[in-house]
Length: 114
Image 1 (cartoon, one colour):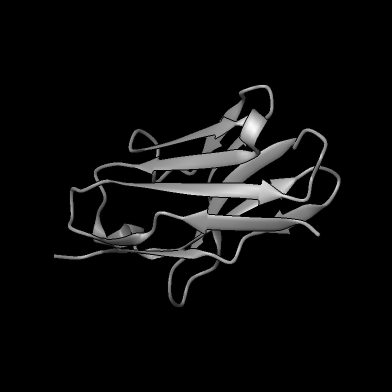
Image 2 (cartoon, one colour; image 1 turned 135 degrees about the horizontal axis):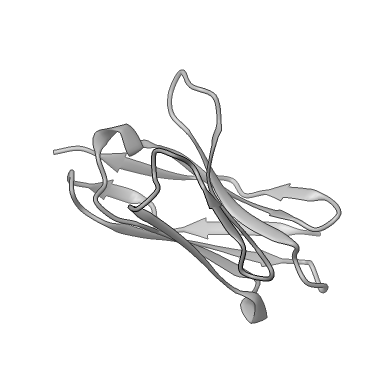
């Protein structure tokens, strides 16, 4: 059974930073793409950042220059470094993994507020 377990969310002040982690278990072959999406209240889920197994990455326009995605292929773990956070970044952040099938984590809440 494939499981994605996220951690690292929380409450942070504007301008602050967080680091999210997501570890995938139950997949024994290389994961083609790993990434992060987010969904704010009343809004559709949007792509934050994705990273393929060869290092190619893509970012959402609103996070470019502030967020960085990375992964440890040996640990099937993907990270998201969130810097210079603002209230508009408040959302539930979901990781996913694609390798033939698409799998999602349960989400972790990020709240940016003073």
